[in-house]
Image 1: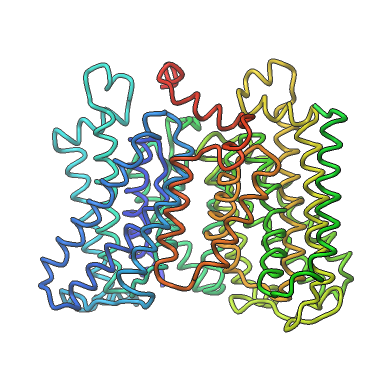
Image 2 (image 1 turned 60 degrees about the horizontal axis):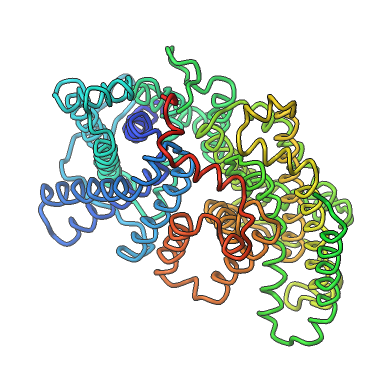
Amino acid sequence: MLTSGVVVGTLYGLLGLGITFVLRVTKVLNLSHGAVAAFSGLTYAWCLAEGLPVVVAFAGALALGTAIGFAEGVFLRPWLSAGHGVIAVFVTLALGLLIEGAAVVAFGKDAMGARPFLQFPDLRFGGAVLTGAQLLLLAVTLLGTAAFAFWYFGTASGKIYRALVDDEYGAAVIGVAIGRLQSIAFAIGGGAAAIAGIAVTPLLSTSYAAGNLMLVNGLTAAILGGVSNPFGALAGGLLVGVIQAMVTGMISTLLMLPASLALLLIVLIVRPEGLLPSRLRQRTI
Amino acid sequence: MITRARVFRIGTATAVLAAASFVLPQVIGNISVLDFICVAAIFAIAAIGYDLLVGSTGMFALGQAGLMCLGAYAAGYTAITLKGSPFEAACLAIALPVAATLVIGAPSLRLRGVYFGVATLVFSILVTAIATAWTPVTGGATGLAGIPPLGGGNVLKVNYAFWLPFSVCSLAAFLTLAWALNASRVGDAWRTIARDELLAANLGIDVFRFKMLAFLLSAAFAGYAGFLFAYYLQFLAPDAFGLRLTISLLLMVFLGGAGTVWGPIIGAFIVHGLFTFLPSDTKWFEVFFALVVLGVLALMPRGVAGLVDRGGSSFVDRLLRRATPAAKSGAA
């Protein structure tokens, strides 16, 4: 039970990572993140169902998620430059509904699964078992996270974003094109969401409604992990996954979501900067 | 300011509304129209309460759907399990959201900006999640059925001679209350807080008290709307209070005009009209609805009421004023 919690936790971590990254760069909480993930996952499943090779399906869904993110970034420009991110959050809420609606139009209301593209053998250790599908999810999610980390810490463009996150004013002084980078940040967030959506599709069939659940869990991961460090969301995600697994195993499946939400609410009120040690003391974002 | 002329205006408006509500069921035979008016009036009450929070006081709360859910289930539980009277159900329907706001709302007020919105949104989602999970009390995902009818009639044949006046007169009463608050010094304090919190504090306004007041009132309005909802439909399901309701209430406030009194009512009737008279089952509806919301947010931030009367609302003023770069310096 615990192992499946860890596996799901990495997924939540990736979702949270996307949300946190966009939040730190643009100061906007992208509430459509889950919908983008679900839409990309559905695209991937649909491509596979149409007989397209896995690589094409993966690349297509990833490109689509990134494109949707970019479109959002462009659409949100007037609200971003106003410097008042809160109404932008309302807008992202509506954008999420729009994307969810588009998913209904494109794919219908039924759930779509996808056969795993690589068959991993089940892994057994110490009484626990990780199924092949879970391992695949883990692999895709960890690869996506690693790719993001490599870009963020290892490349020049990643460095510019780190500068932007650390000190927006200073970055502007040295000539960073903040507006454009913020739009691109949404695209990157969309890409991260897409990978998460693709990863989950073989394990659990996705439908248009899955976006909300992914948003809620990603948000929980992001806030529990704290927004001072985009990678804090990974720890937050593991925590959420493990707690949900424990509640499901020891109490009831029904209480899984209320339990993590209640924890999120308590953390928000008591320690909004997250559970990890943070140098931010509830900074205004 | 509460002037005699304004009191006269609002008094006649509500009297006409109340009188019309008694006459209408005799005149209109079309059940779907009568149903539309009743449900729109119920949502309007929730929207007016929400507007006190978002429009007048400028607080970006997203929890109104959850508060309405609490009220509705409190009423339903009172009616079915506790076998209470409708009056007792109404009291509990108002008391539970207000209590929740006291306990959770008070500490959440110290959160700034996005975090406050997220906290209220999480609260709303948590309420529906509990309603879905707590099957013995709330009936779970399949819902709570069997709420006794009010004013004669039953689930199949609603007695509109009772329900139309009841819902519309309730709306008129809450409308008057909201108007009185907005027009008084309380409303002035709210608008000052919306414009500039620091300025308000320096002027001697107890910011926390007034914010809490707006919050508690919005909860009370939502609770009563939930009570009406429960007794009118005689059935409750957690799905009805999800993200769609949150976005609908937002749209009602913004489309009608935030910060005005009539705005949310107009918004409620328009939005519920969209759901009722357009085919909301087709797969294109969600896209259409989202586009409407985006259009309103982008093009008409003052809403319909803003187009008609040039008063505008301070919350929107603050939003538009912030759009100038000058206001942004030093915010980093």
